[in-house]
Image 1 (spheres, rainbow, N blue to C red):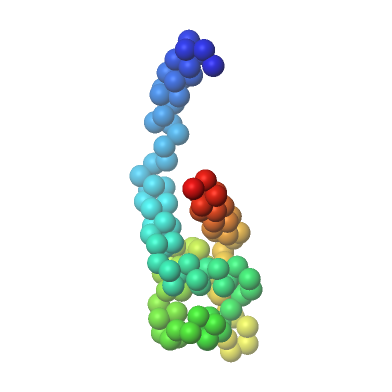
Image 2: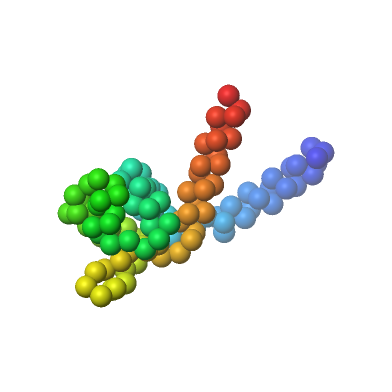
Length: 119
């Protein structure tokens, strides 16, 4: 790219910058999702739910944690619309709200592996 083309593209991008940054409400929602990903227990829960819907007891057993701590984390994930729940008989099963979450996790893992291979 020539210096002249670079300068034109740079000015065009600079002029569009404010249109490309989400509004504050959207930014706050994004930050809250990343905060949720900042806790290892919540990440483990999300990864477990990416395999199959699970009850609180099933998650607690597989992660070797108390049901109360799992319930607390699921509540936070549900508030952020990262997980949803459905009743199956007497149990409530949780599942991922959508597959975007796993896409984020997979891309993060690819980034980490790529960084490891570069070193």
